[in-house]
Image (cartoon, rainbow, N blue to C red; front, side, top):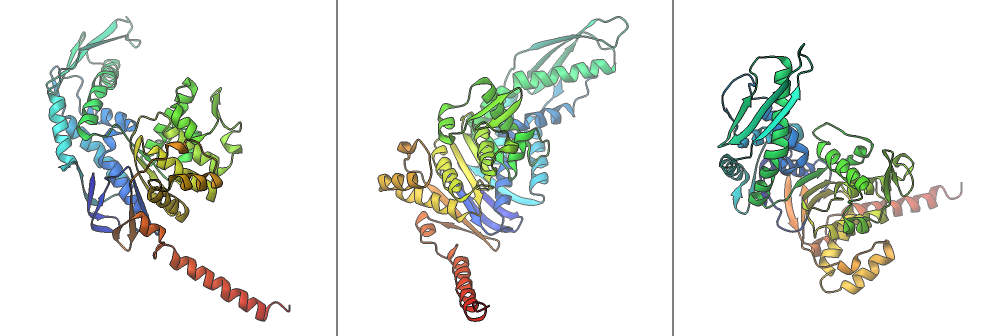
Length: 414
């Protein structure tokens, strides 16, 4: 996967390869890291289950339910509508291209639309009583999609508000239950991505309820999905063991290690939101904005190890301002292949985490964002510290030394 940027926020004419299990975007604020995450997400947003309703709404908005004829549905057009909506909402004016296995995403969407058009979907019949009529009679409609055309075989053609509402609900159910699951499978096979999730900054807020804002919709959907899995006892056991959190839901009240989110530490709340968002363990592309948010320094090391192990299931792209997380990821990638025993021993001294026996080598790409440019770095360069953090650290240490000397000279006697 390759993102070619012509214009995106502060970025111009640059490329970012997403060809390793983990890709890390780092650098100072306002250098374009979040823009890249949001651009990737918007271009692949139709692969996120949280956007299924947006696709359906786009289709329904173009149907005249009172016409007695087959209705043309170009799914590629409605997919582009959702992409354009999220791109405008998340990144604004931009010019980017995404390539997957050498093919432009736009061309793949067109190919997907052509594949959908050739499918003969099964017919479904829907029925309900017209509660608004003086003489209630069942309203019935058969719905079928074939050759890209939607056929509504209505039992009655007498126009009424209740008929239009019934037809719209019937088509919504048909698209949701019959059509989209098949399209989802076709899209997965074509794009070779099981799903896409965007866990934005502030995602933990979704622990407290649903959020409809486009910026939060993916986090909200996947965290809610995780809550439902907790209720059903269907959390992926490997993911549960990896995070090692006791999350329970009783009478709709969520607890983390026995306490409500409001009574839990910020670090536990953040780790819980990340855990719930991936609790199904189904894999796909996972885009995370600053996973270190609210985490203390030891928890930043822990989330680094968790993400590293999680990359066996997900292709992960995240942005970060944390040098601790950055160094942790570089250390894991650099030394897991030839110094694994020492690496595991050191990690165990720092954090309490299981599954370290499964710590196999994972390739990690690092991209440094600075002044509108993006430069690729290796794990070795990150560990050498280069100019990434040492400049600021040295300035702080020099300042402290100067201040201590000044204090001893001018203030100590006081």
